Image (tube, rainbow, N blue to C red; front, side, top):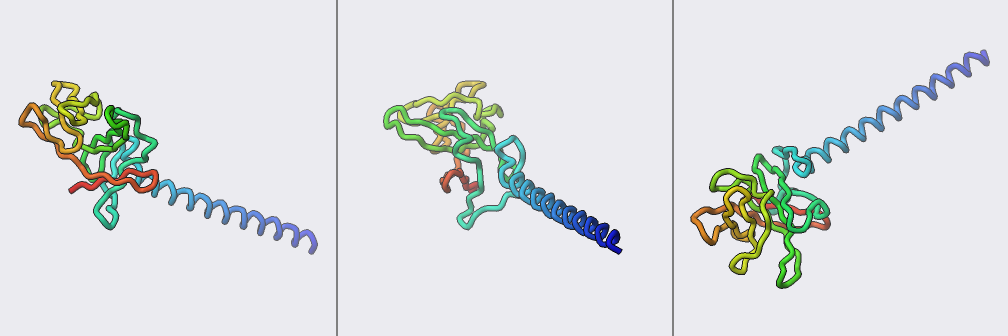
Length: 164
């Protein structure tokens, strides 16, 4: 009888351990799915199922993921967007901009372009043809080409982008 009790106790411990393990795996899986759905865009993935906040902004990336004067390509709701953290050479203030990543001239990726001040505005230079695009307005000071620019807001350490 004592032997049976010991076996049942071991079975109970194994059962508890397995139950805890399944619960842990389920929790980890849910957390990974949340992270992937909300941050896939930062890793070259897609966030087509992203959900906007109450003001219509979508999570874009973390501020720490942005290098100064280097573009980061993200994707929100099937839109390819270039996000830039730019340090203004005159004021030394850092500002974040978002612009359509696909150049309206011939489809080059603007996140690979250089950042320059041009005619008093911070611009990205198309790496293929040298067209300047104002990061704030998306307009090109020297051509008829325009890029969609997006409104940005910072929530803590996160960058959020309004698509409309």
